[in-house]
Length: 369
Ligand SMILES: Nc1ncnc2c1ncn2[C@@H]1O[C@H](COP(=O)(O)OP(=O)(O)OP(=O)(O)O)[C@@H](O)[C@H]1O
Ligand SMILES: [Mg+2]
Image (tube, rainbow, N blue to C red; front, side, top):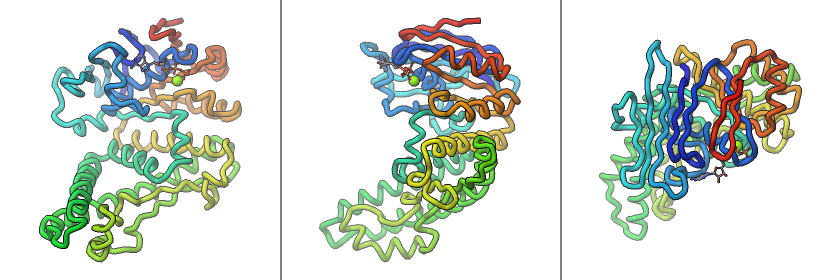
């Protein structure tokens, strides 16, 4: 899969922009705040129907304007396809492929796979379980349509159940029938999600290890992911019943796969506490490379790879190692950003990687040979 053209209208700090991508490696360089990351975010919208920063759809509309439009021309399966994402306060967000609007965004997710490496990834190490759950849910959803469907079923029924618990918090007569319906759906969807997450982690860890070893040049630091769930030891159905009075009191469901965690480890120790900054960064890059592999295997073609501020994240040796992978064709099409043009130009030239370099300045783009 390749992104051949990108067109932006009133997206973030771009009034309008048109870029054509030739070759495989595209590098956006320019000062801080010029709009490099914004370009990656636009590509993220096209592939995954949303951005990757904290900004909401409405905050991504250029200040003072009423709507944004992002359009990408992709080469996929020997055909050209056009994906368009538009947003306005009145019409909300719309995603269309070749002019045909999707009724459900979930039908689009997974068709245009993407792996993103960004400075904010460090949250995966530092923050609570929710951030890691979201990462694995997003990845598993890209891999398997059924996972996304079951996740949506689980989340919707959890919301309904919690709503019911709150409604009946101070009344003795909770609607048992409705509760049983929600529980039934939670149990089925929960069992599926649990199984998929377990299997997925088991398959991912060997890949994570091999990429990590390559990045740190075989230091044998044994990265791992410990998947933990209430369902490891408890029977979900009977536990939901057993905890009902407590759940009513708290107004939320205190057992289930919405509380799962994926803990990152190095030699069995918590990466957050025991890992050095360099080890944490290497872990994250290796994790993303493992993600890349699983998506490639599932789709039979390589996902887009977005590397935001990658040179700031790694020391020189690890950059060299990563560039080796880029040069040997492990990846497909790559988009990277750098606030220091000289550095990326050098690193790419040194590794013998031909790249298309664009200079970004205050929301405008200029190509450079
Ligand atoms: N809705 C918006 N309307 C106008 N400008 C916006 C909007 N959202 C973000 N911006 C602007 O976009 C700029 C940030 O762009 P971006 O994050 O792409 O910069 P960058 O080139 O990646 O910088 P850095 O090198 O610091 O990472 C900021 O100046 C911000 O004010
Ligand atoms: Mg940036």
